[in-house]
Structures are given as structure tokens and as C-alpha cells.
Length: 184
Image (cartoon, rainbow, N blue to C red; front, side, top):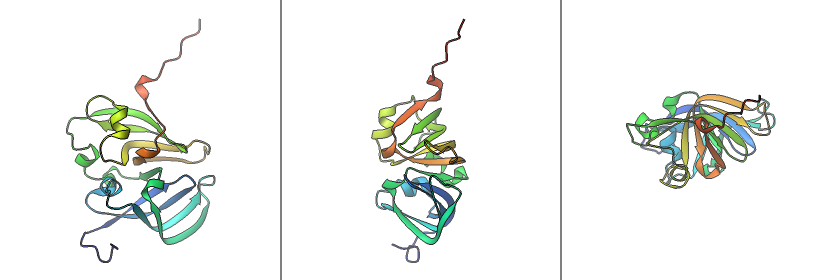
């Protein structure tokens, strides 16, 4: 269903979409459910990026092309960065419907990127449920920094990042970092 024939009201939000080879800056059409609602909707497997400016990851500031619309499958997206937390969706949806949540400062890694930020999770941190249970394909990371592992010049600081949980390699809770031993 295209935007012209859709009965829903859409609004466009700015986003940086990162795949294994490209960074695409553009606008995506969202409903009142925000980016989290759209990216986790199993009835839509593609993402359309309007007014899309493309750059290769190894030269993230050098634009290589500009299109009215670029399309990709959601499963190829490593992460999507948003300037405003509100673009992720309603607070209840971002928190997974829970009112009491714990904040965890985490580092998530994929084969291409490291994401540092804060996750709001109910109860204790449970890696198994985070990456394998439920229907969420994209996990929200708040007040995050995304950096490319092999390309230090690619660094994005943002209010909200959605990370594809199918592409996550590692998750580390930063409070569990081992403190270095003091040398005598």
C-alpha cells in the first residue's frame, strides 16, 4: 500500500539508516506508533527512505548519490538513528508496555557497529529474552552513540537508535566492566 492510498496519517521524520555498506540520510514516513511500531510491524518487510542521500560507510560525509526514494529490506538494516526520542514512538511502546523499568547502560555490537547507550528494561537484565524472545526485531537504545568498528570517522550521537536484534553479536552491561587492578 503506497502513501497515496493509505487511510492512515503519516508524518515524515529525519533518520540515518545504516546497513553493512552504506549510510542513508533521509525521511521515513511514520504513523502515531513511531519508528519502533513501524520497524517491528511484521506485515511490512521493507523501508522506504524519501529524499535519500547516500554515502559509503568508509567515507560517511561524502555523498555519492541523491534519490527521491530508496528502498531496502528491514532485515538488512543494522541500525536507524533519530535526532529526537519522540520519533521512536510513544513512551509505553518504547518501554515495552511496562511502567516500572530499570535503566541499563549497555554496549551492543554488530559485525559493523558499536552502539553505546541506555536501555530501559523491566526487571533484571536478561540477554536471552532481549535477543530471542518476543516479537521486537528492533531494540531501542536511548541517548546513544553509534560508531563503525573499522571506520573511526563514522560516529553518530543521537537521542534514539533502533538496533536490529538479529544482527547483534554482543551485549555488555557497562556496570559489569572489570575495574583495572592497581599496580603497586
